[in-house]
Length: 416
Image (cartoon, rainbow, N blue to C red; front, side):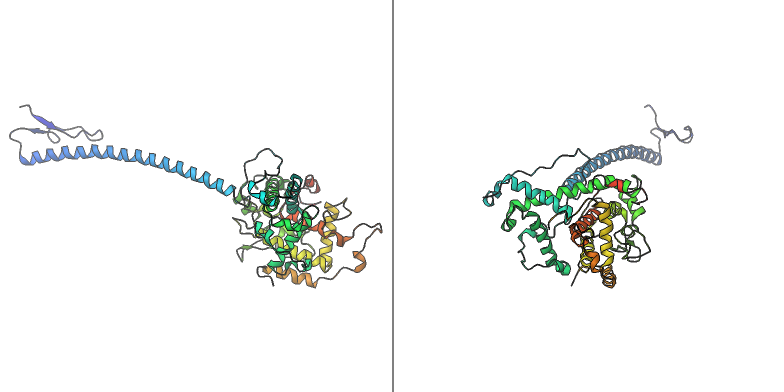
C-alpha cells in the first residue's frame, strides 16, 4: 500500500517540514493521528466552501444593489413627472424653445354649457387669465372654486382686506372687470370659462418664474453660480429676504431687499423703493418653484403679497404721504409715458409685521388735498388715478417679473 501524506499548502506558510507538517498514513498510524488528518481535510473543505459562498453572496449583493438603484431611479422619475403635473406649475422644466401658448381644444363635456360661446370668446377668456396674473395676483384664492362664488353687489373695495370672504369678493370682482367687455356675469359658473381662464394664468406664472431666474443675476449684480443652487442662495441671501434668526422664520416686512435704505427694520420712508425689487424675494430664495408657500423656506408668498397690498391700498385710500411717494417714484421709472391707468378697472392670519406696519401707516400724515390734483391742467390723471398702475408694478415686483428691457433701468449696484 502506497503511503499517503497530508500537508498544509498555504502560500504564506513556511515551507513544509517532513518532521513536523507531514503525516504518513500506514497500518500503524495511531487513532490520534488519523483524527488529526481527518480534521485537517475537513477544515480545508470548509475553507474552500466558505470562500466560494462569500464570493456568491458578494455577487448577489451587487446584482440586488443595481436592481434596487434602477428601481429607485424609475420611481424618482415618476415622482418628478407627477410633481410637474401639479396644479401649481411647481417644477421648472428643462430649457426649451419658447412656443406660443394657444387656447386648448374644446372639451366635449363642455358642450352642454357652450350654447353661445365662440372661438373668439375662448381666446378672450384665455388672455384675461394672462392679464389677471400681470395686474391682479399670481394666484387665485381657492382655485377654480372661486368661480362658484356668489357676487356681492354691495362689495366695497375699501373693505377688501377685512376678512377672507371679502378678499374672495375682491378677486371675483377683478375677474369680472377683465371679462365684462365680452362675457356676461352668468357665464362665470360655466366650466369652459374657468378652465380657459386658469389655462391662461398658469403658463404665465411658470414662464415668468423661469424668466426671472435667468435674468435676475444681471439685475441684482449677483453671480449666476450663486443663483444656480438652492443651498448657495440660502447661504448668501437668506438675510436679504427677511430671515430672522431669533424667530427662525422669514418676516414679511422686516426685509432688507424691500427697502431702498436698510436700517435694521421696517421703515415707511424707505419701504418698496429699492430698485432691486424687480427681481427680489423668490429669485433669491432657496425655493426652486414659485408656489403660494415656499417648499424650502416656508415663506408664504401669496399671503405676504396680500399683506403688501393691504398696506399700499390702505395708504392710497387714506392718502398717506409715504405711500403716494412710492407711487410717484415708481411711476417715474416704469410708466414714464403713461397718462392713465393701464386697465379698467379682523384678520385671522395677518402677521405681526403687518400689524406693526399698519400702526406706522396710521401715524403717517396725509397728503395735502391740492397735491392730489392734476399737475398740468391738461386732464392727465393725477396720482390717485394711478392706483391700478402702481398695483401692477407691485405685482411685477413681488413675483419677480422682469419686463423686456427693464434690466437697462439698473446698474449692478441696484441704482437707477
